[in-house]
Length: 197
Image (cartoon, rainbow, N blue to C red; front, side, top):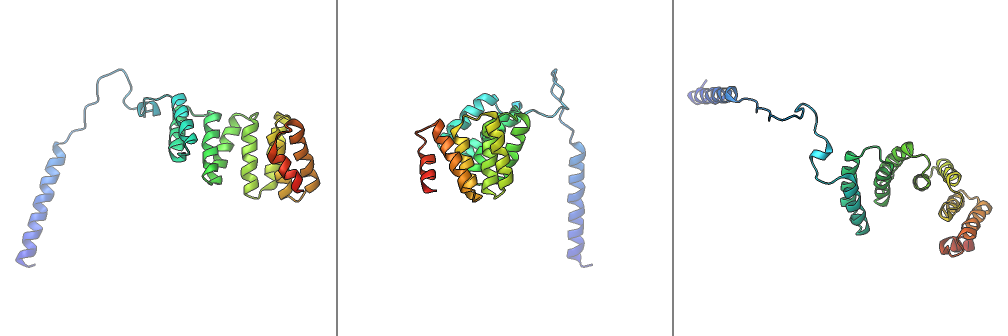
């Protein structure tokens, strides 16, 4: 070894020893004395002063302003504070659908529908994602579920008509558009689609 290499080796060993000495003097911080259990993981409440309802309200405002990323962040925080809330999960799914992330949207819709199987809006939204993905059988199943829950919603019939057009079932689609118009004669989109057929 050259003298330079010996000096470098000595310097490295010296610094390694000093670092080792310093580490030995460090102690774990003493836990603060209070009644809470320091070993428990922190809940979402520890990180935000807002409750889930306030977060949802803020998310709704952000959504109205088309600030989807902020709305999504607020809703995900609300979900952490209030897990198993089908409305929050539905809203998260809906925003993912608006930003064209159908896989994530479907994931949240599935969680929401597991909690609330009688929510026609969740079924309608799931049908919309399945239709966009070309999974017509699944879309039809969810639209039928939605109609079983509430057979007086013109939007469900309209959505069903759109699905049936995609499936090339034109006569059945006409029936669905007409049912939408029977419930709401001012439903201009249904009227336009029916006139196209």
